[in-house]
Amino acid sequence: MVQAVLFDLDGTLLDTLADIADCMNRALGELGLPQHPYDAYRYFVGSGAKMLANRAVGEDNKGFAEQAEALYSREYAQFNAVKTQPYPGIQGMLSQIRDLHLPMAVLSNKPHQNTLSVVAHYFPEGIFSIVRGQMEYIPLKPDPAAALTIASCLKVNPERILYAGDTAVDMACANAAGMVSVGVTWGFRTRSELVNAGARYLADTPEDIMALLERV
Image 1 (tube, rainbow, N blue to C red):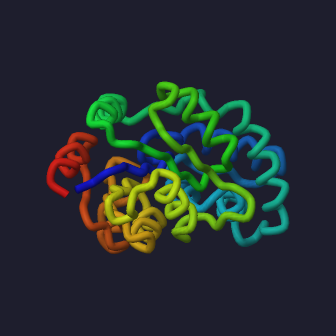
Image 2: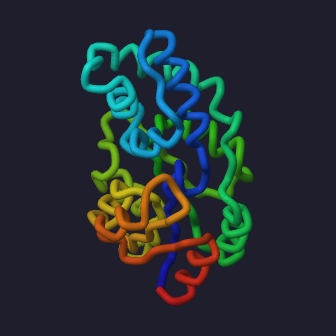
């Protein structure tokens, strides 16, 4: 039986794509580099701000990656809640899970302060027991270290934690941690990516997650 739920943030709880893209595109514009359509960012995000910057500047402009990351971080710190919205049904799902008295946590590869800021803006205070973003000296997902630390803090065995995410990175992290991996299909990546990454279950809607909690 599931005893806790761990969520990815971007592409799982929140549709952050437009704000991320706008902030990075402004950074690229300042550097005189080509900007990208929103859909391109579906494959730029998911592995932290450093990798986002590297992917956004492209192979021919790798020397600008550090500057792009710094400019993006400045922009995103100010403009991370302009177009971002919770996906339909997320708020209701979280309320239902809270009513079941299951602890919930968030684990993101987004920088920690940005993760805290966005979660605080969009979700009720205290609904998540733990919120973690990218932190110094802790490896990014798919390394399972942060997920296992959260399990330890919650005092729940990893195999009793349902981990919901929208990318192959999330599925690899969940599986490496021994958690119940659930790929959400409403996020940034494709259903086939989640299947190929070893998702144990797929959820097409937040209601599907509620159904899994009753039978996993």
